[in-house]
Every structure is written in structure tokens, then in C-alpha cells.
Amino acid sequence: MNLRLFRIVAWTLAGLLTVAVVYVGLNREAGQKLVAATGGGIGGPFALTRSDGSQFTDRELAGSPYLVFFGFTHCPEVCPTTLWEASGWLKELGKDADRLKMVFVTVDPERDTSEVLAEYMTSFDPRIVALTGTPEAVEAIKKAYKVYSRKVPTEDGDYTVDHTASIYLMHGDGSFSGTIAYQESADTVLEKLRRLIANG
Ligand code: NI
Image 1 (cartoon, rainbow, N blue to C red):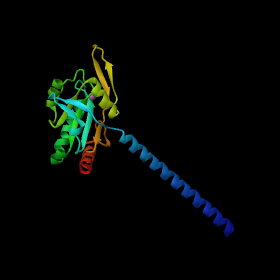
Image 2 (cartoon, protein in one colour):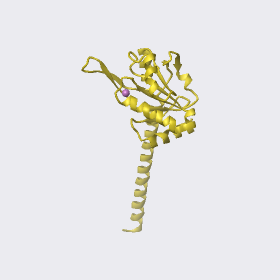
Image 3 (cartoon, helix red, strand yellow):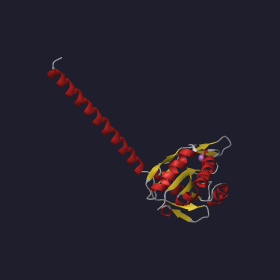
Image 4 (cartoon, rainbow, N blue to C red):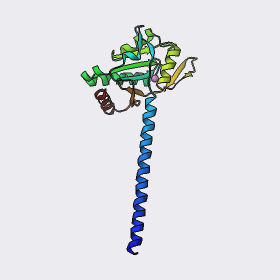
């Protein structure tokens, strides 16, 4: 191969490599923008009722990071496990937990009245605020957080509720930060929570 041909081949390869690198980079950026855009759509204003019967709105969460978990008191496993684990995380965080809030929103407002929630929450950390409301108000917050839930009839004529099991991590300004998956390891969760608290 003469020198001239070698140069042409070398420059062509360098050009192709550059195009490939730029292409991958742009796609990755587009992907991150998509995640940010999707995340940006999670959360929003709401007005619900606390287990003591008083009103509770998103404004009470503003200013400090917070966790939002959706479930129902008749839940056989996911909800009690998650609330039990969350109680442990708050204890583990010690003083840092003062800068974090957590709400548990029922997806079964017909059965989960304020009184039922008050009784149920005695098993968990008292800092976790349990919320219910009219079916319309609950539908509105489910929509805001893009939460899935569906009533499933049981053999005894009653029903259970399938629901999103993730916990939402939210910044103090109400923007979405990420999620905690059901039964994620305590180490990973605490790392996420400490980072969230540090970022505010
Ligand atoms: Ni549940």
C-alpha cells in the first residue's frame, strides 16, 4: 500500500469512528433527557385527609425531601413489609430522618377511613403520615404519581388491590428524584435516602 492510499484509509476510518462516537453520545443524551422528562411528570399538588381527620396537602411536604408510598391496610404482604422496613430506615437514619418526611397514601379509600388508618399505623413509625380521602382525591394523586392500582375480587366475595409497590423519592421542591423498589437491600436504600437528604 502506498503512503497516499494509507492516508486516505486512515482518515476515512478516523472519520467513521468520530461519527460513531458522536452518534452514541447523542443517543445517550437523548435517553437521559427522556428519563428527566418522564421523571419531571411525577408528583404534583394534592389535598387528602390525615388519620386524625385533619386536612393534609402537598404544601406540608414542601421544603424537605419526602417519600410517597401507595398501598392499603388489607394488603397481606407488600404494604406491611414496606412500612415495617421504612420504620427501620427512619430509625437507622437517626437525626438525618428529621429532614425527611414520608406519607403512606391508601389506594383503597372505601375501606381505609381515617379511623382504620390510625389503628393500622400504630404498628409503624409514628413519623409516617397516613393519608386517605374521597375516591376522586385519591384518583387524582394516583394520576399525579402515575400509580397503578386495581381491585381484584377474592373468593370470599371481598376484594384485594393490586398496586404499584415502589416508593417515590421526591425533592423538597416537589420534583421527582427516583424510586425504591420493593425489598431493595437496606444498604442501597439508606444510601439513596442519605443522598436525597443531602441534596434536599
Ligand atoms: Ni400492598
